[in-house]
Image (tube, rainbow, N blue to C red):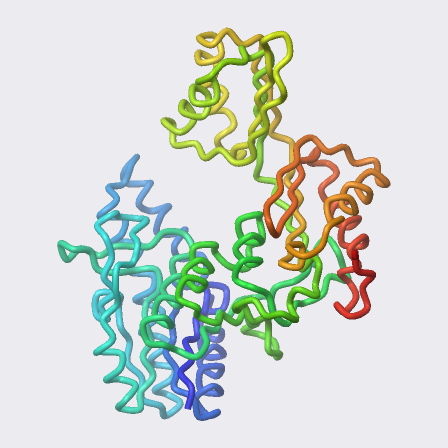
Length: 413
């Protein structure tokens, strides 16, 4: 008998009918002879409604009270899911985060899990029941309710799977797995049977919305196999797991794109020590996350300094850097919030040269100009004008033949 942790997101629990359907998924796994622990999010849209009400009452709602408020969303769904399972004749019991308990630090609205007590859930499993656990929430050191931030239910599910030494963690959502790229852009994108933790972390960080990066990092750290499956369709989905030798045969596993990017360029910066610290330090003090960074070779004592930030921070970073540029005697501060980052990802890159060359050739053939380039062991990212996003994704998907099975692709040697 295996132990499976099943997590259902808000779109899978949007109404009573969908909760009943999700319960059928749970019972189908139980009927296969497996023990099941269920983790649920709030019903689709409910968290946004709660936030809207809070903001109508208070301009800056206190974070502790926001956690108290937002945690009620999951308490609705754990009760309804347990009822649905009981109605079908199976023993089930709901658990809020503090009833497990899921112990966290004291950082409200974005707490981190410290440890999970297993006794209560184990007792329910041993009694033959199905525990239904509230995702997204925990118990702080002072006894306050805490929440884990965006995507927290995925993190709860993976953390429970690690604590209970589950065989797999199944994340049920409205897609049937992880694809080679966004199927809305490329109609013949293929669903991947398997992908490594490393690749999934890269894809999640680069804009793929299937899983939150924090949950994937947790899964990789504790070696929890995670399977992304559709709530509403059949199939085995995509297994996210440790790297296997066969997986390296796929030179590129996927193409990711992220249009939530902006580019900042400081022109004519004095080429002397401390300049990068002055610029990046100012952004850091404003809690602005800097991503890709390029500094050109100095000429005549001057250099250009370019980096990317989230698009939502573009206006703020320009305001923050204006006095810094005057202080360091830069010639100009320019930027654009109409860019996109396109990335090719694959563990097979470790053992093959030529990926970047094929990528650049494909983009060149389509007339797509590359503004910035960044590489790592298993990815190559470029910044392009936003208007070329879909064209670039399609060109790269075709260039790396991702519409074909791995064994049929034209590999780079």
